[in-house]
Length: 598
Image (cartoon, rainbow, N blue to C red):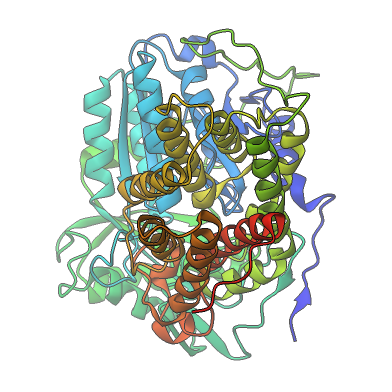
């Protein structure tokens, strides 16, 4: 039976900020931006002098993988690390703040793990930074060796090999290389490393129950680092057998994940996943080295053993193997003050630290804040009614969304959507200009961008901003039903463009695309707009339910087997159908429209 995990925490919603506070109190060379709780950026305490004549190197992602990435900030490694919520990609604003804080004339390299949310958020932040005049390059790391060839937009995940790439890039930057040269070194390193993991238990998210997915005597092979199921479940074996299997998978000439052949020099990294004792990691390292030498004919030049990129309290380990040459070894051996790279810690702890002020955008302008009108128009009343119904539906669905997401993802979809819904309801009371439909939709996007992490947050921000831009093109004060339908279509196209998904990919678009099609069809046929809205909401619900029978091709669900996916609908699609349906029903009840007979 699943039980609530025991955690030494205060508030489950504050674990990341409290972790950062403890981290910078422990290590004298680290500092953080004064942007809590929305901006969680750890940077070098000497950031001002460091940014003058060196390329900045930034990495980051969802929290829960400590010490990655904040523990690897320091001279000779990362200039800054951007921390998202647990298992959720950091928000665009946080990434952009980190870039502004540490990037000087030499530019900035972003090292991004290959997850949809990270690619989207870091990608948008990079584009925004370039528009402000910063020089930014990006390297994507996908070192996972447990997955078959590319599936949809997913591809190989970024795992512990990213830490080696961070070290090499940081050392290259410290020598004074140009941005292009540092990017080349990081890209080359990312193509030389492969990783595969083994889990003995499932991790527990703060404040949530522990999954009982793994029974006694079982282990998962080829897992990700977000609690998603592994590629296969097997009986627990002696560590020597497990290590042998993992090495065979990484070095298999059939898959050719890494360009390593007998006679090559390699670096070995044994990484604990959070709850594995150092004794067991050392045992794994002791078995891996002779196997690499004797069975695979490789010269093992460096061995790093410890916890580098974890998955909260998961028991297990991953193995990373990187092809080495003199240049890579020199970068790995170069001095660094990053506290969790396996070297000593130097420097005296100062008596107190004052957070670094948040840097302003280079293009910052002064705008009058938007506010709620004193008196609502008919359109404003309808918007308020629809928004409130939609957000209440999401709030009521939180536990179901988490449950479904626990089966097909990382278990936080409901919590993420709940944060967005509650923020929207709160902001609507004071700040939404409800008589202006376009601005209201834009402000919904701003609320989401501020509080929602992960892929859902960036997707819904793109969705709202695209709709806002389309509605602003309308010069009339009242938006017609056909203009709303067009805005929905434009928003769907924007999400598909930037997220890479389309119909049948098992995403929220599988609810919204059929809804948009029916809405356009019924309006063009001359139906009453309320009836068209109702019928399209039924199509959204049917589309969401149909995801049970789809093989995911985007997001973390792309790594899950079809048998597991069939047991739950896509939580993102169910959330979209829920708020869309609730809004339609609210409008129907307002006008007392009878349900159409079909």
